[in-house]
Amino acid sequence: NVLIEDSYFNTGDDCVAVKSGRGDDGRRVGIASTDVVVRRCTMHAGHGGFVVGSEIAGGVRNVYSEDCDWDSPDLRYGVRIKSNRRWGGHAEGIYVRNIRIERVRQAAVRV
Image (cartoon, rainbow, N blue to C red):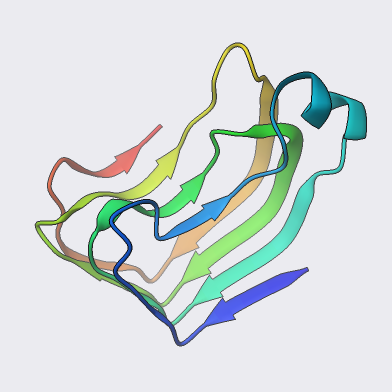
C-alpha cells in the first residue's frame, strides 16, 4: 500500500512510475504493486505525469490518481501505461479521475 499526496514533481523523467520488476526476475518473484494512491499532486516536467510500467512483470493492480494538476509544455504525457514484450506483465484496475490537464507536449493519455 502506497499513498503519495500533496506533492510537486519536476523530474525530467516519469513523475510517478508504478513498477513491479522486469523480465525473468520480476516473473520469478511475482509480487504485484497494489493499492497505490496518488492524489492532490502537481506534475510539471517529465516524460509522464502518472505512469504504469514499463517494468511490470510482477503485475500492477488497484492504482488510483485523483485530484491532480498536470500543466506544462515540458510534460510529454499526462497518463501513460506502458509495457515491453520481453519483460511481460499485466495491469488491472487503473483509475484516473478529477485530473486537470492544461498542457502536455504530446498526449493527455497514451497506452
